[in-house]
Length: 319
Image (cartoon, rainbow, N blue to C red; front, side):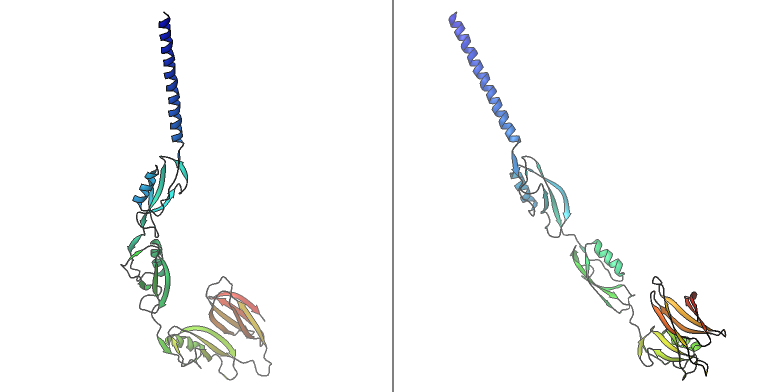
């Protein structure tokens, strides 16, 4: 009986040892597994690497390579890594993902034909393709003013973005030079017609008292007679006005008129009206906003000065 009890006790002790050993083994395995989950790896640097090399590095480190996107890049060759996340040197758990952006290389295309486009159209088209205008020269040509005459690189050349182009822009047809005729001695009624007939544009008209000249005739002009001038040049003239009545001292006042600063180019006409009701134009010209007109006004017998901007009365002053 005692031997049986001893055997049973021995079996129980052995069973307990086995159970204890199994429990301890399970705890060790669990601790190892937990340690494995907490294992952190330093992310290798793959920026600038070709995709295959980057994949090898990431895989060897126990991580996964994930492609986020493909982008055009002027500096990174095609199929190389532009950037990565997490950054190189970051600590992450084994088996996690490293996201990368892969280069498509530079954007390439054929240079468009910019000839006969306006400068704005050509510039916008180039900017859409990542090209800036490096230099712009202007020349007279048969092409309309403001249009592209020539370009570099020429149309059809294979180029990449972020390059630069040079444009040659037209100033329009070169104006024809003509000899300037003399308008001296012509009356104001004749001179405007003759100025236009000669290929010039009517310019400013200034009135001065000239005792030695017939009233209401041209006594000076600019450009002067005989000078070669481009067609369409403005012709400014000075017109003689009547001298004060004999036996009376001449009395003058300085009259100034400043155009509104916000006014565009305006046709300005200044008219003097005497006490006798006679009117005389003492200024006629085109002026810009902010410009000041200064005139000597004959006050013989009293006078009223009226300023017209584009044929509308702008100011009136009585002396």
